[in-house]
Image (cartoon, rainbow, N blue to C red; front, side, top):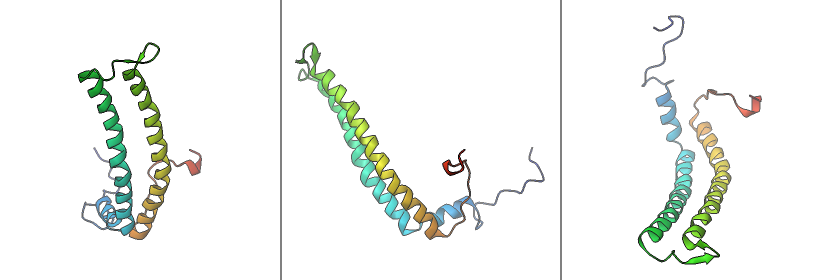
Amino acid sequence: MTDPSEPAPPAPDTPGSALSRAAAVTATPAFAQLVRSRNRFAVPAAALGFGAYLLVIVLSGFTPVLNGKAVGQLSWTFVLTALIFPLVWLLCGLYTRRAAQWDELADRAIAESGVETRATAPTAEKGL
């Protein structure tokens, strides 16, 4: 049951609706630049991460290439699997650096669109 004192949400096609605000933001050049920049990073990073996992699985599961000893009792499979962790940390660090640029592009896209922004969650600036 809805509270009659609360205003009804706007219909999807009205100028103040979330869909119309989103359409205004996505139509800006800054948003297109944001999408291109994120895709230029995300696609190769995902391919590299997934490829590394897949390479270890295929080489260790279907070939004897990695069965030999690398260091002491450790096999090459263990060594390559352990090297995936620094790879993931590296990709996460690179993503974090690039995310700051993407945040600026997102803010610019919102500013270019002219839509009114609304806070929906506590922010760090308010100390919450």
